[in-house]
Amino acid sequence: MTNRVSLTKVHGGDVEGAVREAVRLAGGFDELIKAGSRVLIKPNQCKPSPRHSGCMTDGDVVEAVTKMVLERNPASVVIGDGAIAGYDFGGFSTQEAFDSSGVTDVAKRLGVELRNLNTDAAQEVTIPNALIMDRVRIAKTALDSDVIISIPVLKSHIRSHVTLSLKNMKGTMPGAEKRKTHRLGLDMAIVDLCSVVRPSYAVVDATVGMQGTWQYPQDSKEMGLIVAGSDALYVDIVGAALMGIDIAQVMHLQYMGKKEGKRVALDAVDLVGERVEDHKQSFMTGFDVFRARYPEVCIVQGDSACSGCTNELVSAITYMKEAGYGEQMRGLTVVIGNASDAGSTEKVVALGKCAADLKGADAYVRGCPPKEDAMVRAIAEVCGADADAVMATMAEARKKLWDRSSSALER
Image 1 (spheres, rainbow, N blue to C red):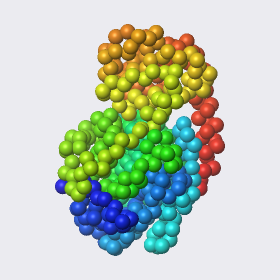
Image 2 (cartoon, one colour):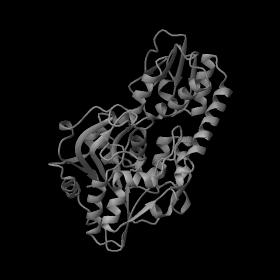
Image 3 (cartoon, one colour):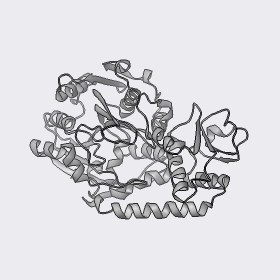
Image 4 (cartoon, rainbow, N blue to C red):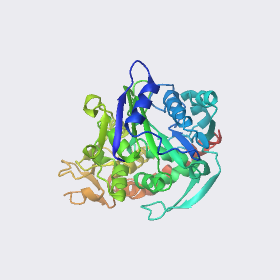
């Protein structure tokens, strides 16, 4: 059953035992991996971080999965990823990430090739029936693989609320190509990407999770769990539930479910092994932390507020302040989702389809989700700021950041 997902507990530090049990309960690899299979093992090696921090997939989990794959004698096995290229944050060296997570040592010990997908040969592919991204460059290693096993780590995220098995496929986009997903709209772009490089199986490293803005050790969450399944969407539903994050607000999961005709809810999953209720913790998303950093702005979230609007709002508010308009934002209220009341304030901006019926808004930005530049211009207008100056600040800051990061992407 494709909706079967397993949840296992790591006992006595035996990570490999927990991984093997999770894969067995979820149906195993026997039908997936054949003698002629070319297998890509795709961990999340986003940036160099301490082992067991929850920021990257740890070498222990990668080793356990790789051993299980090798036991089936496939034609080839590659462990590959490409670290963060950076959009509003910096980019990193993939090799340094491999080294710090223990994955380099795993590859050497098991005799498996380790490949930096940021520098891999790439091919541009056309995405049929795209939501927003109709063409994308993909590492040939991923395109040439018969089986892709996604091994993310359990993390919340500032833009997409969660980063799990599906979003992990961004690492197959070489280098700065990853920025395309942000420019076009992250949640929809993830769905488009996964239509051409969808995981064949997913094993989530939930031994240690990471919340907030991924600061170690304060944002690490001890979990001691492994999640596995043959359908990455259902695996990610369980991952979000373990973090206490409302699945209805994670739009790439919702878009994927709609596209594939699947119900995106925990009770749609055939869960075996441990119960989510016995292990669920409350993870702060990066957006929760972001809101606290801007006390001058009141962000009102209705029940339907989702990652679509919060994703773009991060940039709009960040660059308003960087352009020198922090004081002008005092008293600003931004409404996302189906909130019925913005409260008593003079500067109200309503964002997105769900907020279309809000009464008393000084500006409304259409879209589901609205575009970043439209958000910036609406907020600037209401606050009496120069929108063109904010947009110029945004472009200049990103260019400087990307120029500084460019050398990291080659390593």
